Length: 255
Ligand SMILES: Nc1ncnc2c1ncn2[C@@H]1O[C@H](COP(=O)(O)OP(=O)(O)OP(=O)(O)O)[C@@H](O)[C@H]1O
Image (cartoon, rainbow, N blue to C red; front, side, top):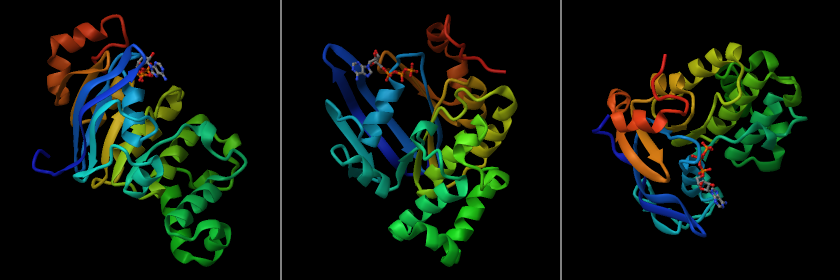
């Protein structure tokens, strides 16, 4: 893994909100095909960092590069076009659409078919095939025609990841995929996340330590906006500083 080139990097990234430094000199490097987790207690600055990487927030200082190109000041949609995609919470989805319609919209948009998405699904075999493959991959085939507002919560979270993947990302920022998902529906999401395409570089932000430790081959621990340490899951688990930070929180041990 260490031989793989760096796809996404931030160097010395800083974000201040008035007197609060939410991101403090953060350097992070994501290699091609990475399974990298970003963890940290509540308020550590994970959401702020994701917002900086995606361009929702402007950095106060520092630099972000994608495939070596400086994207620090690039608009969010242009970062998506360059292959960096994040998952979005369900409340931003079209609730009255079905998973099939939603994916057809994203896939046809992605292929430059624009507003002709619905007829594209009927006429364009490639769009229909891609939608069918995504529905299959994300365990959504049997609910493909069900309006999203009627889907079980776990299925909605799967649809969120399917939508992100429909954008053909090279870098996927996976934002708390199992947050709020009932126990009985978690396994399906864990399996699906494990089965994401190997060539896609994934940065996972997650509180669930079972998922983090089963998924990640590299971890960065953020505390008070600062990188406390970075390492393999074994190194992170054995690190007394990490343990101390998590005491009284959700616990950095798993299983
Ligand atoms: N728009 C803002 N204005 C002022 N302060 C902010 C803003 N956004 C975040 N902060 C502060 O920055 C710090 C980091 O917040 P952030 O939401 O990034 O943490 P987090 O690690 O994502 O937390 P959680 O796991 O609870 O979601 C917090 O102290 C928060 O209060």
